[in-house]
Image (cartoon, rainbow, N blue to C red; front, side, top):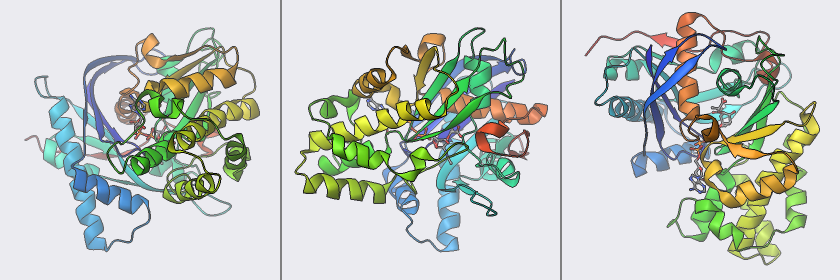
Length: 381
Ligand SMILES: Nc1ncnc2c1ncn2[C@@H]1O[C@H](COP(=O)(O)OP(=O)(O)OP(=O)(O)O)[C@@H](O)[C@H]1O
Ligand SMILES: CC(=O)N[C@H]1[C@@H]2OC[C@@H](O2)[C@@H](O)[C@@H]1O[C@H](C)C(=O)O
């Protein structure tokens, strides 16, 4: 089946769109990437999204406008990625997360992704699956991370224990047992590791007065010195010691957290490069520390994906803290680092059609595994 996968993540840097040909089911799943592109948001729309993520209030009418503007941008990205290719039969659209609250005690989680699937289906003429997190949340789960079951199929190894580490705005890991030992995918572990690039991006944007959006290859951070006292202080945040299942977002590691970091760094007289070096170290250590705390054994290999996989300095720090464990990217096993999440939502939509579960209960905390997403029919245009 030809499927389009769409996602814009917590970095809000644009819509990743992939066109794939999918065959098979789970361990025999085969993915052929036909095309991939990232379609940036119009700058004004990006600013509106970031404002909502930073808790700016909206009327319901403005909220509806925003939802449709995002859905329209997603539909455009879908049409762009399939230009020149035979039409896709299905779209899996994650949408844009603007709010994420994990469950606590009796209170159900709540995760809001804008860019409604019904508009995407209508605009593109392609049936669309969206709203992937809601069913997991209905079963008491975090609604995230949802990619680990796809990782198990696409990136698992017959004999190796592997960690697939996404470093997007937020970081998340999937820990895969050798496929020979785990034929069901029920033993996959995973959780959000904390901030990926989100604080770094906020810092770069601040220090460059909006001229730069991210620290290309970690070049700026590499020129600074790590302030160990701040790294230790930031790592004492209760999120890091809480056991999985756990997920997070800009609500915890976003604008407010960055403001605190900036205040503390300024009080200590840190230069911009030092702040970036310290934030990079914080991300690297939060990942390594979570492996030490929560993994039953050290992985044989770590495969990185997401935009952070392009940050050489972050990779260096991570290697240092992971000791002997080889750290590579998913690209070395044929899965492009920037397309992996979009591929995952194409697969989750495909599984929804086949009735195959998408979540992993011990990852999200949901009561059981279930197909994910809501299906919207379309009128062929
Ligand atoms: N060449 C590069 N050097 C350093 N960092 C980079 C580079 N390219 C991208 N990034 C970082 O990656 C980020 C985007 O990553 P990605 O697209 O994986 O995030 P996302 O999908 O929005 O987040 P999430 O996985 O949390 O949903 C950018 O905001 C930037 O910080
Ligand atoms: C609520 C939400 O959008 N969470 C994202 C975010 O970005 C990374 C991490 O936090 C992960 O939990 C999740 O995305 C991926 C696609 C997931 O669900 O696996």
